[in-house]
Length: 124
Image (cartoon, rainbow, N blue to C red):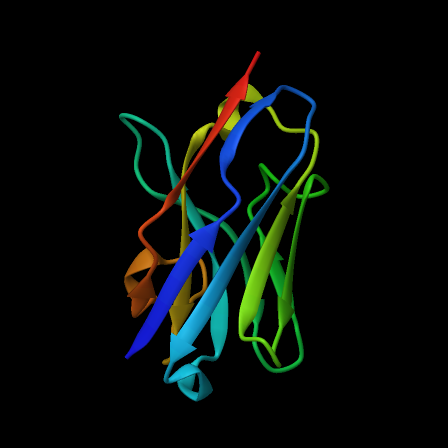
């Protein structure tokens, strides 16, 4: 089992920045990718970003490309999401995720582990 704990959500004005962090514990050696999904009220959960644990290859949704940056610290088993130029449309609960098996990084069903979520609210 892997446990994920997010931190760093909050309220920010449009155009501002926030940094989310996620700490993984437990069987972290089994992780091959970590990332973030988000879910806004009344909308489906959507992919935001992911990073390959070995090598650091990154993946982004088109809606956040150029504004968000995902990074990882393998020694500390943490992943971070730096969010810049935030927009009202970025308001959502953000979930840290990790997966141990194959499958597309863009598909939520391929992730074995989910954090409890952290709220990000962007005021316009």
